[in-house]
Image: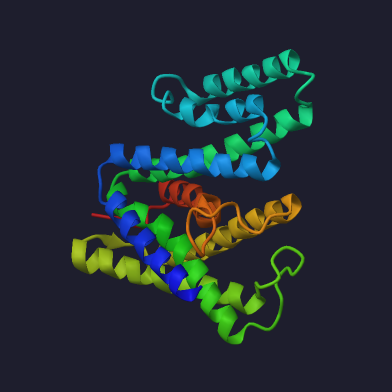
Length: 266
């Protein structure tokens, strides 16, 4: 199992690095594909993939994101809600309001949160800032796992995620902060950026908290749906949602934090 997880992780990292070095168009397509796969896994967990109407309604938001440059988001949101309520009226024998409400929340949450990866890439110096999104999520997960495995004794929220510990959560935060400081040092020494050290470590700590909330949120949903993983796309690691649950919470945080308080600049 460990070898399988390791091989999957190495291949995934290589693919991610190639995509992040690509241009914005490639990143948009990649993020769009991730959104569709995450939505499909979520709807499968809810049992909606066998109900065609709900599945079709649920994949409208990522299609609308492609139109965001033409129509503003409030207009698209209104149109989407109108379509959902119209479907509720037309297909009232097949779907209930709670189904429509679930589809709306899941589709908007997954689509908008993950699309912030693209938003970060479009920022000034976005080709460098986008790495902070994945650094924040991946380093938190890695250091939380290592710390929890070595010294974890106090359960964090056992009813949600039995294996997670308080020590692991703290280790994830510290590891993420250190990783962000190293990231800042590399940006300074290798690429000549000026670094806001105070903002950098604060962002690192916030990203670690957001990543763990994202992970725990996905665990709550899985527990309610009675599943262990969202899928099997990544052998030993689960599905797309299992890999991006932390990232989707970190991406908006990085975007809005950097908009308010730059962490690197020339």
